[in-house]
Image 1: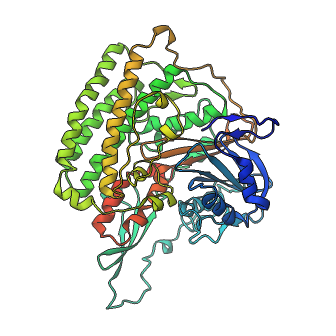
Image 2: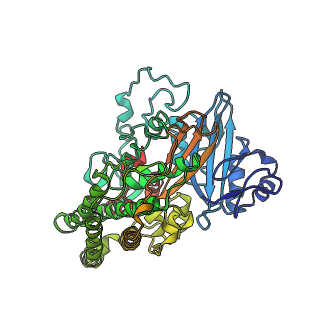
Image 3: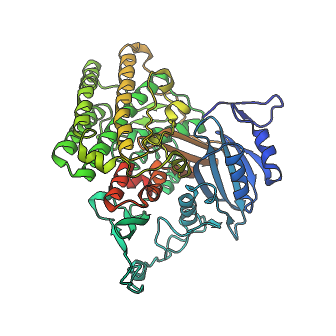
Amino acid sequence: MSSQEKTPEGDLPQVEGVDYDAIEDLLGDRVIRRETHLNAEGFVVRPDEVEETLELLRDEAGFDHLSMLTAQDYEDRYESIYHLTKYDDRTQEVSVVVPTDPENPASESAASVYKTAEWHEREAYDLVGVEYEGHPDLRRILLPETWQGHPLSSDYDQDKPQIVTLDEHVNPLAESQEDSESDTMFLNIGPHHPATHGVLHVKTVLDGEQVADVEPDIGYLHRCEEQMCQQGTYRHQIMPYPDRWDYASAGLLNEWAYARVAEDLNDIEVPEYAQIIRTMSAELCRIASHMLALGTFCLDIYGDFTAIFMYAMRDREKVQNILEDLTGQRMMFNYFRLGGVVWDLPEPREEFFEKVRDFMDDLPETLEEYHDLITGNEIFQKRTIDTGVIDAETAKDYGCTGPVARASGIDYDLRRDDPYGYYDELDWDVITEDGCDNFARLLVRMREVEESAKIISQCVDLLEDWPEDERNIQSNVPRTLKPDPDTEVYRAVEGAKGELGIYIRSDGTDKPGRFKIRSPCFNNLHSLEAMAEGEYVPDLVAALGSLDVILGEVDR
């Protein structure tokens, strides 16, 4: 994020573009103290003043994007941290820290200020045990309601037997009285259904043929990724895990999210040559991910398996072959390392560059073919135009990012707004559409493939001419990394689905004290309820497909 510099008095660091003194004056007596985090200042407030504090920051200071809520426990307190920034200016960030009594970990809910806080607070309650008073629906989101204890709390007893009763899964309408005049129906979609794109259970209430309410039920795939990362060392044991979050072709983008936060936490520089390789490989992953999204979406919309789906898989396979040449793997790449990448481009380099260029050369004709088959298809247009609509302000309230946000006209892309890698040295454009519907979300992804191709071509040109004696793929990184205790940082990259961020709090050891993943799919999926209300069931299926969610990243 933006660079820090000392004030003339040598006190707290200031981030360019953010007047933290003015923010402190705005919040007044609500501020107990200020904290220094690597990415932004943190303001500690009382647990009964959360709502007022966040309302002031949103309405008076313009912090309209709640990126993530982090919860954790210490020996003497539980703590929630709200990471805030602005859709219009990513350089402005602030954290709101809310400590609570360890015997009664309760604070005000932020759900009335930011809609996206509903799911974030449910997860914090489920895994850490913080109670959020005033939350409209505070219950578990990943674990069964009958689960005993909170797994990320220090007092959790993992040996305690867990029993999930059958009553938990009884028909919710079983005791209701049938009304001959009512058209209400409860419909289960998933968790094992081809339209759910993974083990997702969508609880749907219909009023006649229209959707009256939607509740995505996640947690079937939860693998405790955050806890596993907290048990691994920074240097060697965490990097293999990110590939498994969004496992559908976006592995290097996931790896970059961890690399970026760990490198900033440990003050590690990355050689320019390695940054170009990272940028090229990440955009190849973005193309592969968007190809998969395109093919499965069309399969959802009008069942075209033979043409669209297989064509998309064909082109995704070309990218997978290039990535296999580069990394040695087809999905679980494990190619990035802190300080760079694990090895240089494959030899002979000329053959590798030729393979990449051949793919880039064929891409314009391929995309034109897709437009003929998809965007020009009358059935596709009927199913996607003006369905699954979410306007820009609602999308912001849900914390949407990536193609979902940009299809609603939100000009927000971390590659440009919070530059990392080699993106700020290259010529490319952020793609937005104003349709706000299912059609616009597909169109954004198709146009983003063109921009990714532009980035890749420029990277190939640079790598091709790079002097042989300056091809540094890694900086010197200590074998053991031990950041100063209680150092906190949140960093994010532009994943294929949107803002993929990681918060780390160090405890002075070679392993994170807290490791929290901000998944774009988690926030985007939450917005399904806004897209589907008042629509028909086929439109609900289309809206879900347009979100391009991967459940391994949703519940992690």
